[in-house]
Length: 256
Image 1 (tube, helix red, strand yellow):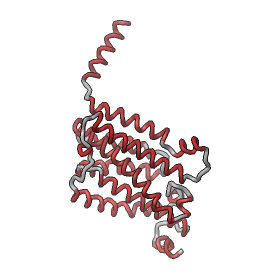
Image 2 (cartoon, rainbow, N blue to C red):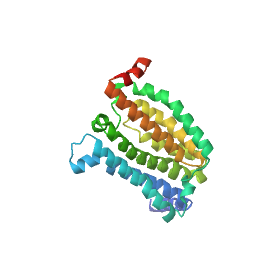
Image 3 (cartoon, rainbow, N blue to C red):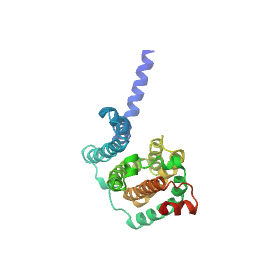
Image 4 (cartoon, rainbow, N blue to C red):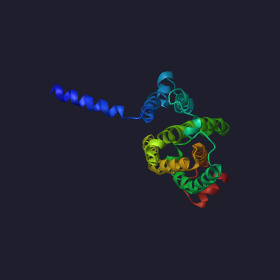
């Protein structure tokens, strides 16, 4: 029994020595940062610590700021200090801007009708903005709220479509697109069903776009633009009490 256990340890040790440091570190750091994000960068953690009854606004700003730090600032420090790499190697570059801009415009235009249909549901529209009623009731607050969303989205896209995708690209090739899609999809748990399901395809499409453009920047442009549209259309629907997807619902947004 003891000899068998020692043999297993030796085999495990040999297997570990075959692993590449770079890819192993990226997997572990992504898991660790995601753990911190889930438990210490969440709105619930903020409300628990500060014992506040705020209607999602300040807890959302904390969430966006904390996640932005975890998913952007920490990897940016790890890349040169631990991985001995350059930020440009992880998609932090302009890349193929012609493809990036054209594909971003195409994706946004294609997505708008689907977002309009999804927002026609009162339950979906009431989910956004995630800053709660304070943002929904005060249009002037919406502008700087979206700046926090932008920082969060920039960090989010860098983390998945930059740090993880490009960090694993050399070792896993096109499989890195699928690898980064899985946690991206899982972390949409708790969102409206249609959004969670769509995140599977969004993760793949954005991964392909980042790969082809050799940059995560254009994924950020797409993702942030979509979030701004969702927030704005949800506010308009709430204020006009206009739900549904027909032309009458669209007209009612601006006539009420």
